[in-house]
Amino acid sequence: MAWLLKRSDRDSRWYICFRTTSGREVRRAAGHSRRSAERILAKIETEVRENRFFQRDQRSTWTLGRLSEVYLERLGRLRPRSARWRREMYRQLLQVLGEDLLIEEIELATLDEYVSRRRGQGKAPSTINRELSVLRHSLHLAARWRTETSLSRYRLAEWEPLREAQSARQAVFLTAEQVARLLAAAHTRAARGDLNERQGEAVVRLALETGARLGEILALSWDDLDRNGILRVRTEKNGPDRWLQLSEPTVRLLETSAITARGAASSSAAP
Image (tube, rainbow, N blue to C red; front, side, top):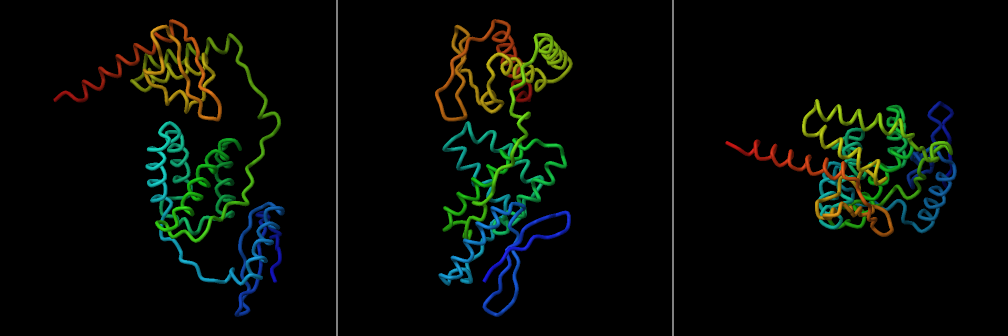
């Protein structure tokens, strides 16, 4: 027999309560959503009836840091363009959760705590959802790699992504004046800064002209730009790649950035 319990403090978290065969009461965190908690409760009751719930599973000794290394290495071979932005997502995950966290201990309550801390840092729901989607994907694969990871089961199937306010989903268009100010600021920083700042100006121009996502821009190579200034943007989502005409100033800026980057690489390699 299992039942739901909601804490009355400001945490307002749901728990699944049940008794073991020895009579000891056990509580397991089930997140902040009653609907998710009810689904978890139904699953536990089914496993109890089938005498599967109290079977002792082998527990994984893998840490989140180890999983991130294996996950990103394998994904880098299969989908190198996607692996770049996933690496950045994992960097944030490790900063908050820690590299030493056992993947066996990651559950819905872990995600609730992560959301609380990231929102406290002022991060948008869409940003948090992307980070957690990478975590969930890696843990889902870890469960499939059970012969290596020994992960007993995947515990995050009931997670529901955060909802954004309707106003946050509306497109925001820059005015001509705002575009000019943005380009001027990027150019000023590039003139005063180092190589990264100069490359940053190129990223800003590409974003304004193509509407590409940051991950798509960072995945570009010279093979994607032909001699006529037509750029191929390889989509990160489902759908065809896009072919876009770049302006002459942007092409010149890209060429200048490439020459500067090669010069910096040659200088650092010189004895």
